Image 1: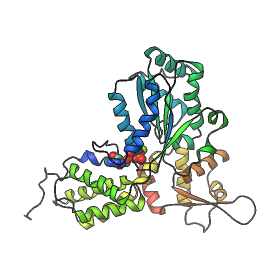
Image 2: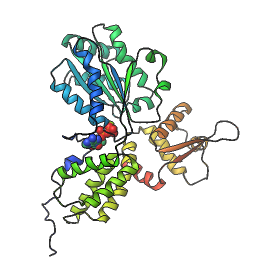
Image 3: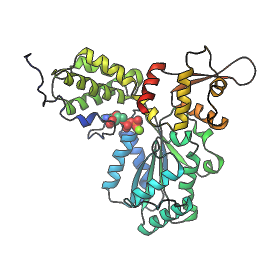
Image 4: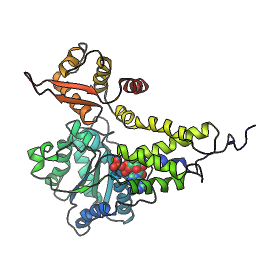
Length: 377
Ligand SMILES: Nc1ncnc2c1ncn2[C@@H]1O[C@H](COP(=O)(O)OP(=O)(O)O)[C@@H](O)[C@H]1O
Ligand SMILES: [Mg+2]
């Protein structure tokens, strides 16, 4: 028998959970300024005023969700009338879904009866807030999904207007947007823009030193000593910086260590790292594909099918190639725009010629998208 092999019941992970995407770390550095800004915004509510709305902006993996969660923990611990409610707009991406979730979380798990009209739901919500004398502070996390679904203005309007209908009630809003292409001024419609005042809190990408700090802290917590060398960690930091999302680094570590474990080795090899790097690359794409609706998937699938059949593919070609059950033109265009925003495809306008021709392309290799689409089905 080979020496120094891992026994079947041994593991290299001290705590594998620290590499999960939803894990909220105990130690959370580099974001004090942003958390302070959030705290500043709720202060007026403690002395009878209303919460200032904030918009948190920053690309994925810059600690926005964790900052809000950390801040919400503080608020909950401070025993005030403020009740923080975190909404994941990737999951709740319509006006109704958002407020139904708010109602459920606020009432500690009461479900609105099925078929409740939106107006009734808002009445129930307002009555509860009034009776319990609480101040809801809602975080619309990844609100860019509401924007893609054209629900953002409706949600904000409903949240802000509640104060007009029920004078004693006000809702504080933290909007988190992780798509840098979104220009808020052009998104907000007039009725919302006229009442929506907000402060912007920016989450700049982490520097290489910060990424190294965060990852090595996680390694110390989650792995047994000597599983990963410091050179290997440098390599992971480097790969992480290239895509700018710290989640890739965390995912790479987890995968590489799992490969080593499967081989019953006590340490990670360069091979494990390379294998992990290519698997982690697809993390974003796989996550995005998971959130797509059937008609969005249908268009992506068709684009995969058409890719490579002709040199330049226009949106028109794509739509014509679909069977009769293709989405209507407006919806088709909406979906193309959304897939572009989600960085799954690229859309380029033709410079010359007549009309507004748009060329569409997959951003990833056809085979990789195709593989992930099959997994989803
Ligand atoms: N400053 C930090 N310290 C420790 N872990 C962090 C830090 N910033 C981000 N992370 C970790 O990186 C991952 C992504 O962070 P997250 O808050 O979800 O980013 P975002 O919401 O901006 O996409 C999470 O697992 C989180 O725990
Ligand atoms: Mg987030």
